[in-house]
Image (cartoon, rainbow, N blue to C red; front, side):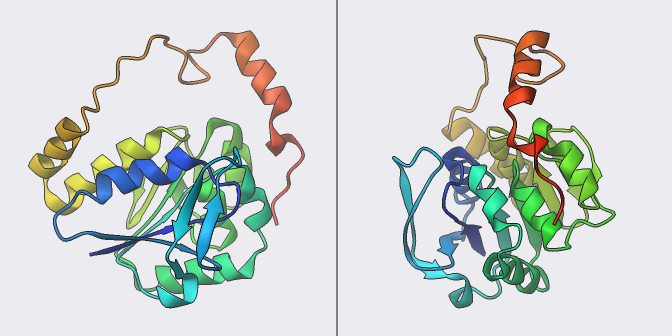
Length: 214
């Protein structure tokens, strides 16, 4: 089972690593990081890099494709190298997935039109403008398309998909081995729960205020 995680400059690291850690733990899974060109790809901090061992062209038909989000996603919305690969890989994939604003790239490729999908809470309006039926749920399945909300939800998406593919016990075993037992010190992980002034401050700083669909 080949799992291809797409990389591009200024992706968010946990968006990629959450699915890598969960989906990659399935028996028989082969995870490959892919990008337009081979080599290190820097995350949104500029301090961390993951290595793309293969180009998009070298991985034409993965079983599962994963698109992480991040600030760099904005630069990918008209990048045919990525969007064309997504469309071609999706034609034969068993599962097509995204984390955070990775769903905007899937939508830009035309893969989420009329489908239920999620994204980072700040990006839901843009996701809807791109033709998806946007929902604020943490993980959304619509046929073979699986989208996760912001950043940390990629772990949940990975575990949920492992459950679908390999069964509940496999997913539970991976959850236990990673000791994924969230007990956050604050109950501010969604706009419905966070203090209103923090929500408004982050909305005011959001890059999505200026973006329009391609």
